[in-house]
Image 1 (tube, rainbow, N blue to C red):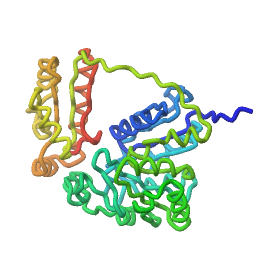
Image 2 (cartoon, rainbow, N blue to C red):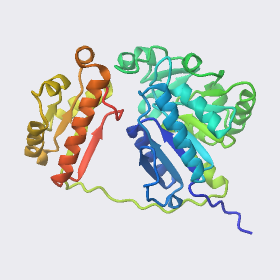
Image 3 (cartoon, rainbow, N blue to C red):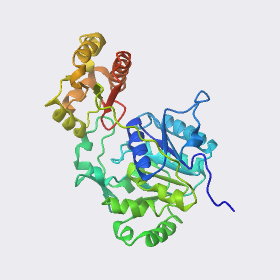
Image 4 (cartoon, rainbow, N blue to C red):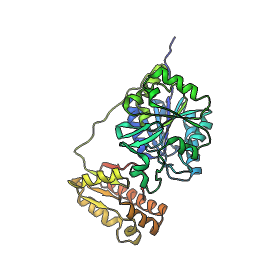
Length: 374
């Protein structure tokens, strides 16, 4: 008798932004799951044989849109994944739990729990390799409480409360319980018992994690959960669960980077981390900053920026839109948050199209978010 598990694909993931989806996909591939990323909600025009993959990641732009939009697009994505035969589901959000008092993480989790018909799920945003850890339910960034990190000044989702239980309490409908690091360090069997007991009376089970070993223990302990939520670190070894079910990992094909080809870099994030990366890159490469107000006035236009980009194409140029909090406030008061974000995003889109038309094959989109954080 053949006991092999044959699914098309096994794991279905929903990410609330494009770059986060790419991060998640890279973790899944590294764990052994052959993965495809779909940017935007798929429709009937999509002509891809998903049975060739172990995992599917749908990348949405739902992190900073309205709660209703985020819920609607996430539920539609979930139903699509169910229709594709997925058995396990993951909702991926940022490891800094980027959201507001109203949402969008909590409302989306609630809607997805209802869609997948489950009563509880895990909440695990930690990504220790990037300095994001959770201890007693408090989220830290490089050793600082989230509320004391640069995330407190985020222009769209300022994180002023590091306690995930409180944040979910404001956003979501159910109750939460923290599974602390002492339980996790006792290993898989102890953690599974704790999770099962906590799930009897709580919808959201918040997991501490201080290092990659903790994440591995968590990954190996959530097999009983049809639906899980967290950062990309939660995908560290989900292949282990699939193989334990009898699944056979599909063969992956890796393509070496074409390092000799020209590269252009677009960076729209205003986060402190991205700004430091931009500053470092500028030391050895040409760079040009976009200004939303100048673009709106016509003082900075696509023709002049493209001319600069193409003139510097052999030097891996960087075009960025980062700024300090004071400049961001000024832009918001002058143009409005949504208008400024849309302006810069569309500008980058036009640049990307022209770069492709000019046979620039490698385009790097830098930053922690796909939406411009103006």
